[in-house]
Image: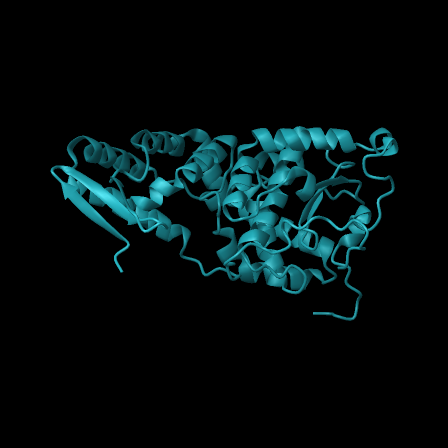
Length: 129
Length: 232
């Protein structure tokens, strides 16, 4: 079943999803982040304090160039709707997500939160270890 | 693993988990303990620390909304321990007799909220699986600011290149030894086994927040996560 699709109307690209009420909701395709966020990440990455923290953690200096490229691709996407800029930016962000998820977790993720999280405290019962 | 020693899961460090010295809300409690100060600092941490705000938001999204009066408890503790997470009662314990500065409170709240977050989103077997315990301790030491350069210097642990990882490793071992009756070699082995996947699991921050600015950026990214994932 198709749960999302891209619809091109003129020069605008829309991203559409089916909601829980089975209605199609469409919104304009846009960069994953506000473009200024890329620039602020780039400046933060290059700062002395961040370079220090990176060395303190990983023993190397951080590589910040990708943030700058992402910023320019983001602007290009917003201004001129360039397909190449859009794809480059999306590829870069997908790499970031992949980097965060490349290790096998030690535990299994839950489907639902713990049942006793919201239960009131029983002050009279002794705590069992 | 030596199973013959009686395991109390670290509850001896938190004597008020079993029976408090003063009745909750009593005048004796407010006169003879730091309870009120702890409550005030906790409220301030929850409202202003970007680390805590992000974790509280993430927990709410995971179905574990945190209520201050239900999920936090300011108590007197033994020794120099600063806090703990009691999975049996789903409560974060803050050691009111050992936390006297707001920055320390912020860090302890963040540390314990990471345990609570792991409890909420994953099937963590706190009492029987040492690997799960070690993983959560590694994440908490890594992401809470416990191992910042300035904190390490204040403990007279001077190191620079990759020292953060050494600190995370040693604090995780220390935390495990404080609450479980196993020997140091076993604790070190377990931490080494799970170090790589757990050190690199930065959920929900998306990065290791070394400073308030990092935490603010992480919070900004978290608030915009719907737009982010919809446009990948």
